[in-house]
Image (cartoon, rainbow, N blue to C red; front, side, top):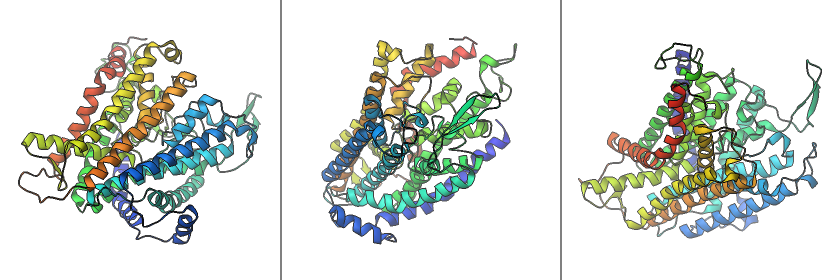
Length: 571
């Protein structure tokens, strides 16, 4: 680790802290209707779509609207991908996408996962990239943010289960947050060198006299919403390691800020909406501590290097085992510090964009992104998803605190009872059921083992990472796994759907139940939710839930791999 690397990491942290409050205030004003500077567009949309702007939906109606919207947009994308070969804006004349990949891609993008088992520049036409994949980048992100706002409303209101209007929340989020910020961000990316065109692919001669095809396309616009909406799907197979997507260290910094800006801002919005700003900052602090711990661990592991490459006779406990650290799979223009930082950010935020090959990280360095996803998408998390996922953990924490002092748990003056905890546990238990269940199946079936390109514990980690990424709606991968088969396309697509909706629906139900609760006055036995004790207990609950569930699987994968490489054992 170097001083320069730490300066860059700390600079990122300072900027993230600085943008949290203004972004939180802006989102608060958007969703309470104070900002209507695009009302000339917003109002006609309501009229055309038959939306009653003043309707306050019950949580069940809110959930049904969200499910119907997601199902219809997923179906439209499936059909469009299957018919790609007959549609315009396809200068490379790509054929329709095969059925299994069309299903997985439609499910993945509809759930804000953006898992890709294909190379974007050799599979998707410009029309598919813009009208389908980019459409979902906006729509799925808007849905996630709308759900987070609805859950916060449920906590703050006394409204008999009514938590807002799904259609209004989604439209306002798209119009006032995602489109304007993406437009500005795309211009910044173009200024930094990201390409934005509709040109056919170029064929150029190389220095050796061979011919090379250079992909073109509307990249900067895709890149902006990909990061801002924590979608993560790359226009190119190399994702944000490709110089056309992420050309400079400054574009890399902008991408990392874009990934966290909305999730971080939502913590301030939470504090303002529930009229307890210190609680909002306490949630931010818990997220930040987990993020910084992960960054420190990943940076240490990658800077230390791979013990396999240590000089002969060097003590494997030395602070640096490999001269220059582990640069395998990393871009020289970003280096180890920014590669480790990006890896932690993208897996904390369920973004899935990568500027380095996670498969080439050291065992411990690669375990950090894996654990981030298994914690439940709560360390800032995806846009909206991180907030409602964290609020589930907050309710669980308050419940445990109440049990420890022997009184009915309360959260912001509302009693937590059995039906609220049942919703929380439904969401919490879905994760190990799907991730560990599908990993176990893939680890023994020939169809699952056929996709491995690595043996031993690293091969197991590839399978575990794939299902963790799919369920967490992340989309990044240990790329040694060949996921373009009927088995993986189908099971990963199903995992993305369960990972999205098995958390959203219980979260909405929790919001509806809490909105029906009366507010009781605080007493000496009320557990405060804005103290260091609360932050520490919240972090402990998150870690215990993740560690107890996934530690045996991690022991079979990255942990045993670490000890084998430390003993210089190849596999």
